[in-house]
Structures are given as C-alpha cells and as structure tokens.
Length: 100
Image 1: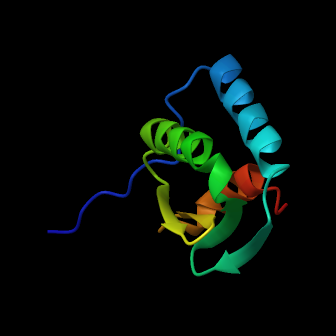
Image 2: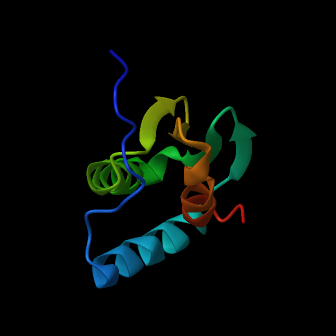
C-alpha cells in the first residue's frame, strides 16, 4: 500500500517561520559554501558553529516534516544536507539555503 506524501507545510506560525528563516540567513553568513545535491542543497560550516547548526537543523526538521535534514561533522567542518522527496519543496530548500 503506497504511503501518503507528507504535505509541504510548516507547523510554525507565520511569525515563527519568519524568525526561523532569519536565523538561517544569519547562520549562512558563516557558511563556507553550498552546492546542489540530488533532491536539495548542501551547506558547509566551520566546526565552531556545530552546536548552532545542529540546533537550527533539528528545529527546522521538527517544523517542516516534508524536509530531510541531515548534519554531519567531518573534520573541521559541519555538513548540512537539506532534501525533500517532493520537487515542490524546492522553493523552501532554496529559501533556507539562499539558492533562489
């Protein structure tokens, strides 16, 4: 039996979503790069920002269940992969990663 797709919806209030998007914008200032990956985008940060990156990524994953957000510490960097199975989620991924 096929599973229902997860709706592209955020559980935050409009003000909460705007505030969280602003957090992504501030965090991206510390990014050391971004790249396209299958289904989304990858961001790189210095390991010094790991706690902030991991916290924001976890909060984003909690409010936007249609996104898959994975973080990994690799040497002196932190990788964040933001992807979605639904191509209609691309504008959200672009907004979070400033790829639009």
